Image (cartoon, rainbow, N blue to C red):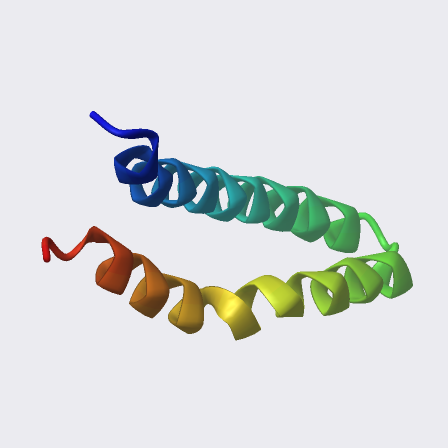
Length: 69
């Protein structure tokens, strides 16, 4: 397998890791929020918006990269 063939798979796995980290951070954020640190929870949720905002583009780009030529 050529190294250029590995790139789409690598990016896919990195994206999976990113989404898993987002989910874990959101769980912790909810926990923090339930304990009264609403401002901190809101700040974290605001920072996570970038992941949500970029998710669709990343999925589309990965689909294109993983399509056989």
